Picture 1 (tube, helix red, strand yellow):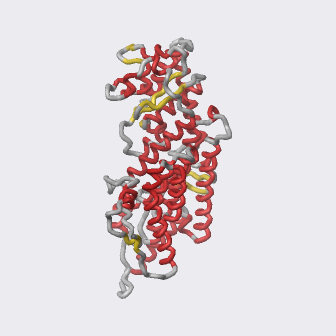
Picture 2: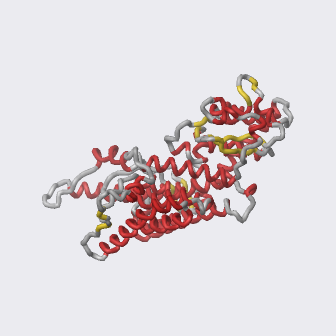
Picture 3: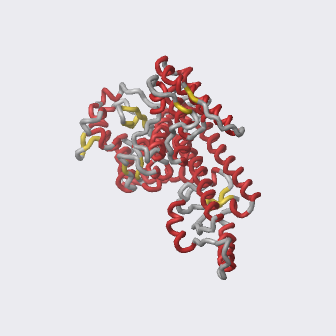
Length: 440
């Protein structure tokens, strides 16, 4: 059985424990407290070993590393099966797909936290361990903010039952408008769900965290709305309108959604302020124009959520490089007036590695849904470049060139050539050679 241990970020751990507990051992100077200090260090590390088996012995380290790798693969495989094109789109569960996304990302972060904790323990620095750690030995049993995947699905069932109870208490039938009013009451008033206009926290970007904290992106709140209504036997559809994703019940009388009661139309209550914002394309919609919109499939909706996740993690990864764009290096590589670049010193800015990896993982999932999307594959290749995975970047960008429009392929070609040489020189250096190569 494995145990999920939640501890403070590394910077937090250092700031809280370094001053009080860290000590230096002088190897060139005898001190009468040396043996006492050594006993203190052994006591701390022995007590922590049960919480961090990676630290306790090499065999445990190897076993847990293997387990985490298998857990990552299992979560990805379950996601891929859920959105597989071999099944009908109506059978794709939005909630399950996004909970598998959360499970994979959480497994990755838990492993990183445990590795960080072990590094600090090896240095003799105290780290916190959770007394509420929950044992798990499979993705299905992995706690996501205290609940398993099945328990989060049950949470959606519970919300639907609250809506049913609201309808029964008011002796209301199953008229479309009345059911939607009850859903809105439970979600936005009783449970207090609200939209976050700007994604600044991971709590707004993962389904289980939105269910837990009640605040999230518009697309995730739309997914919760769709899933709750599905449990009530009501089909909700959606479509992209400009920068917004709007949802509404599948009906042959959409004009009912635009009738204003209590100052707002039902369509506005479901979709938020964007519908009433004159700067938004959504404000121009009417009952008749609604019928002309292209309905998003379940796979499309999962794709939108993943695209938002890519943007969020890329923004976090490049926080110290505010003007950095994924495609910035392509413009420099295509500029023939620039001086030759020494490829052994690529100007790759330092990014936050965990957030960059999470963005890459979200991109990998989206490519399962959209394998022929050349722009997505280009961005994926560029993230691999920023992550210094030059071999994989060359492969992805080369595939991208086969799908991209001619002008985009021409822009990619000189960069891919330089990237290929950077890869070769990296291999050259790994053999112990020191000479540099110049790209002209």
